[in-house]
Length: 524
Image 1 (tube, rainbow, N blue to C red):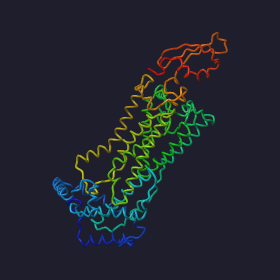
Image 2: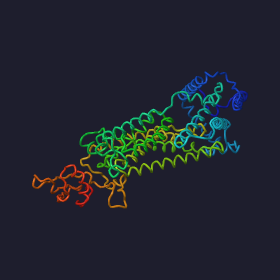
Image 3: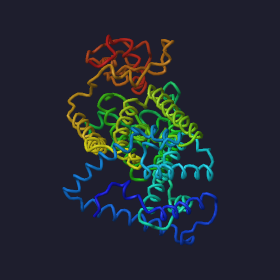
Image 4: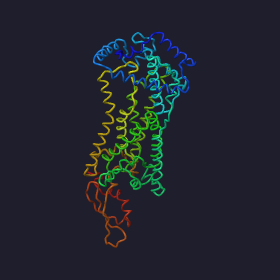
């Protein structure tokens, strides 16, 4: 096998190159391609060419000897002397300015092919793109397709294969079913569970002072599988780290999550596939619930927000690893693409802000949100496909390649380790207390803050217990109450004047009694 570098392999006789470029020019003017293909052969030719290219690369990889490696190192030095550009932006600046003195002709042809593909895409689709996150992934997908077409064109040029026009290549890529089935299925499940929870609650909503999300009571949510640490650890109900994902605190919570899932989930799934989207959603959702159970053991919480934040984290990872190509400019019109990326970033940040505000209300918590986003970013590093820079001749050394390989597996490995560690810490808890007492304010703010009478509080009085006493025993009303405060102290006080005769009424008044009579409303 030859030990030449890729730019040497692409140098063909001038007559053959002129003939290939003639086909390219003829296609760009809208005339019929001179390749020997009919309409039914495009997809087959595309697949066969891709298979041949893969086999040729495997043969090349398996035949590299130590002498060839030395020659390759010498070739790397030659490449460094030929290609002076240090980045894609600098390379494109050379091409756009017509300064080809420092760029090898083979690389120049590759870049010209890529620019040609971008021009053909603008002719076919225009400059308009879908709104928001869908536009980001449409932009990434178009760059990926155009890069692959230009690379395919270079391979065909090298191996004297028939020319496959960009239009035909683009159409061949669209063959098959690409629908966000995971997103559809999950939205259906959440909708069914939303109606079910309302039905279990007697087809009525709780008062806004109890549930500001316009939804069922805490007891109903617990029956449906809401997260509560004591039930998970003490009663062994470990399904509660999974079941909250399909539950929602109320209609407001449900609609906001479904809108976010529709835009973000469908975009991620259509770009990266069913399996990757499922991984990016499930691992952050479960990891976020475990983190919430660990740091907010007293709180009841539900919602798909952990998985949605996982998708947001994966989007941020996708932007980070493809930053150079997202802001790549091959023409003046690409300025709008860069603006769209910034708009998407701002939209993601706004969505994060809105969900964190919602996380300050009852039954929704920000530890699930933020934990999900961290897990999602880590999973995104491993599952999101990075666009190749090698096409542009921007080769990286072995250290950089090793680093990229470690990063590729780093995300999933760290995510699995974190879930194992946090699960072990949760299972080993001896007391139902948070390791960080001040962390409650990450997920709760008493509202309204301007009034002494709150809609909800951030203390531990909702979880106190008491012994109700009647003296004499045949008395209609309870006379006194022995209340165990959150810090363990017992306070006994008279309740006869309140005229309470039912245990359920006493139970409803316990939080108010706690705030009135206990010195400390927080668990020590």
